[in-house]
Length: 188
Image (cartoon, rainbow, N blue to C red):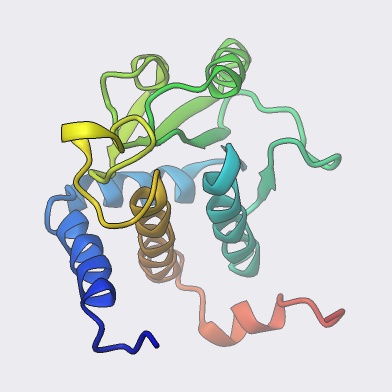
């Protein structure tokens, strides 16, 4: 039976903590400011990263920030004044690269969150937020550093990063917890 005192829990939590000891908080603040200034924000992530960024979009909605998740039928077009926020931990996936190209050609600003800043998606971005965590790009052989499988460390770090960004953005926009709660669905 596993218990909270089991070393695997401590290792996983310590790895998450180590990610945030290496993050550039000024870059996080820059990402928060980009969202605050955007006319609207459209978010994209693939696989499990998509699950994390969808949760982030929900919290942005709770704050009254104009937001959409790429791929939803209600996603508006992007253009000047808009932000296309993409998470692509491994640095490149073909869908992200194609969508970034479309957003840039339409005049939207592109912010990429990644663990692999040398990837193609980062080279296309206007801004990069480095989240220094293991992804599927470095989860094998001598590159493997995490007890967690594949890209789980990056995905877990995304959750924490997004929650901290919400706290910072809530302060930046002067949104109260009560106002956020009022925007929560009543259809649950």
